[in-house]
Structure formats: C-alpha cells, structure tokens
Image 1 (cartoon, rainbow, N blue to C red):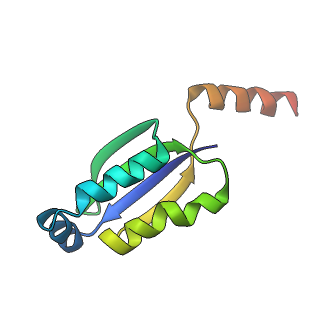
Image 2 (cartoon, rainbow, N blue to C red; image 1 turned 60 degrees about the vertical axis):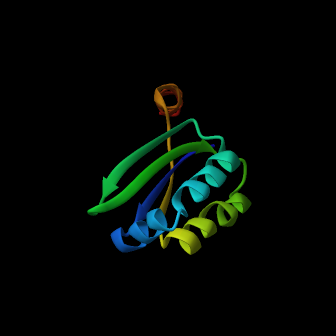
Length: 99
C-alpha cells in the first residue's frame, strides 16, 4: 500500500545534523530501504521537511523506517495512507457500486 511519510526536522537538530554530516547518510539509508516513488523537500512548521511516497508491504516495517529518523534527526513523523489518481478513481467506482 502506498504511504506518505511526512518528516519534520526541528531547526536546531537539523542544523546540527547538517553541520555534522548526518543528514545525507540518514536520507540515503532511508531511500535505499524504501525505494520511494517520489521525494519532496519542503519547509514544515518553520523547519526542514520532507515527504516521501513509497509502498509499504506490512506494518512491521514501520519501526525500521521511523526509528532512525527519530534517533538521528529528532524528527517528528506522520505516516499517512496515500492514493494516486488511479487509486482514487478505482475507489470511487467501488463506492458507487456499493450504493
């Protein structure tokens, strides 16, 4: 199932991670693990942010995905199910058929 991993990195923790060279290895390890469909870097709540869209096979993957971000970057995490247009259209068709 496709998910959106929304990552918020507080400014001070982010500054420390950039200065100490922790950001790039942490992100690369995450991307190697997830093989994301898309990654966007944004600002969130005045700090660094990132949204990663990827396919999660089972919920037991969650700790391996989020713990390094908590521990290495002091990140705040949201993990949300996400749909693309094809998913939405298929779901709307199913909803219509179930009326």
